[in-house]
Length: 451
Image 1 (cartoon, rainbow, N blue to C red):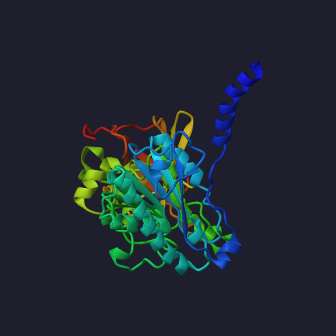
Image 2: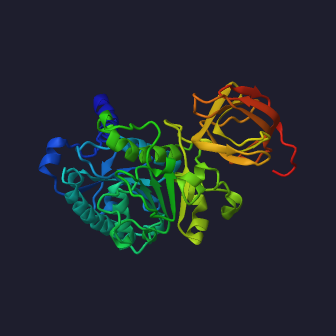
Image 3: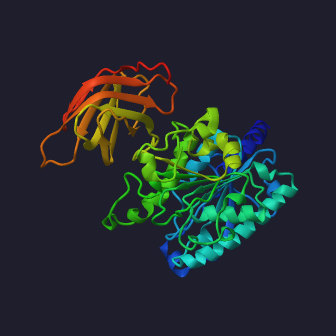
């Protein structure tokens, strides 16, 4: 009798443990599938806070049959792009983990690897249109069960960005948000809005560009378009074809890594509206007045704070720069330099901030800056990290020309103003910079009362 009672207690627990260990995984294919070609098959893998690391397959015809799908929660769809080798995206588990850490949502990974795996890219583009039809039908069934379209967020990578756009268009732009991570360029560049992602495809569309001169799309597509490091070459990515496959995909894949960093929320990347990347680097676009008290928008997950003003003011093109690795966000200062040399000087400035045992570096070398007597030269100094309390500042002036005579830069005043924090700017007066020699000093608060 005792044994039977013991078994009745332990068996249900054992069954539950076994069930918990059964996870449905993303379709794993290989190069042979790509060579043969795959027909479209869509699988929906659901992740919630109850099963954050264990995806479960849901019925496309009846999502309500799944015990973990909660209609009252917002739903986020994650849609991958072209898979030329058939392998699962390396970032899938990380993005579901981070999204669930930020909000109690239904995360649905759209597995269309059968259809995306094909060496024939044109066939994959054909399949993505079919995938969009399928997803639109699924979301309509969700709506019939009471799901709100405005609570649906679609995150599309590369071709997945355009799939999101097609789905949104079929639903008359009623989806709450589409986040497009480096939308695919080949077969979409130069097409009409109806044939690609467009800002009318959802109530809010935010787009990141990281490989516009390769696999990505160059022109703006959303209510706000972020151009990381100008939207093309990403820091740390290979510059030559001799680096192998990473040369082709590193810039493109960086879009996902940047977005993951923003979901993690370790730091933020402010983005500045500007006509061009050059003008941004020149320090010509550092005003955020158009966004009111909120200031310039941040890239990524939390850009929804600026949603209303961006929808109201129309499509906005913005720029920001990143570090080579995570944390990718950098800290921006407006740097103003006034000299009293009689002759004009051209050169580059390297700035270091020191404080609390840390050092942050900004090298302003995208072009030779012009320094003219009693004329304020404005520069954008982008530091690799943020120093909360700056104790010392180091400066180095260089010309990049080792053959000419060494110059001196007689600085009448230098002023450093933090662009993300409202605090009194730092100044220093009467400094002599000898070419290629670093000078370190303790800054003081600027004499101006208005900052």
